[in-house]
Amino acid sequence: MMKSNYLITTLLRGKWFIDHRLDIETSELIDKILARQFAGETAILSDNKPLAFSVSTGNDSQLTSSIPEDIPENSTAIYSIEGTMLKYGTLCSYGTTEIAAAVREAAMHKKIGSIVLDIDSGGGSVDAIAPLVEAIRLAQVNNKPVLASCDLCASAALFVASYCDEIHAANEISAEFGSVGVMMSFKDYQKRNENLGITEHRVYSNLSEHKNQPLELALQGKYDLIKTEMLDPLALKFQETIKENIPGLKTETEGILSGKTFYAADALDNKIINAIGDLNYTLKRAQELRKKLLINNYTNH
Image 1: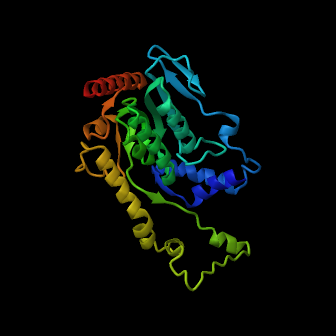
Image 2: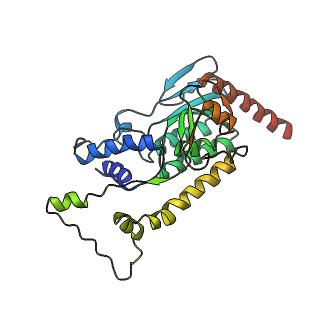
Image 3: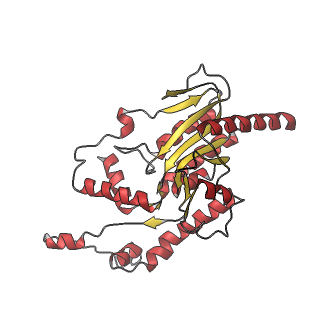
């Protein structure tokens, strides 16, 4: 039940780096949960279906749930980040903590030389970002390049991808990047409850006048405080991170740091991404970057 409660709490009250189109889909999931259409579902996806990923050996790729010991050195591990990003696994998705654990294993494995994140996500909850960023950094510290091959790479997904050594658009048709911004959504059921004869009372200590103040004002339709205290600091951090991690970014382009999205060609022109190419292209670049790192380490020692 605790696992299901995490999903409900995050959907209802979490802070999000998310593209609005994905938020619409998430709202439908909230409605299903509140209508008890998922009643009795307490297991998480990984309980019944272990996280799968691919290992590319240069000539072929194999789907697996653990890194084979007989693979050649400098193989590439490929991990998918799909749909709404949540920190913990739920009944319908893997959490970023689960994906990050698998990436960390690859980062420390002697036969894995590079990592590719296959991203198709419009973002997700803010707390889903850190586990993946930490795993990416661990791989890079171990001289293993991490590249992102992306279809939709928006909001929190772009936040994560910005830490990779390169970002690629997997195609020129649907690949889309951006939506740098933060939002918070919640539903107010007070009127519905009143119609059902239910009155909720929230009583705060005289010494707790600031507790939940932004949310309480938002419930009254006063959004200024929730913006300035909760959302604006996150949005500023997001902007600073993107500018720092993507130094060639054309920040003067309208909307590039305030929520606009760009298809592949425009994303490349605005320096959001490094290249346009399919997954095979990204795998080749991963091998090239790995060789450069090995050569640089050899010559410097």
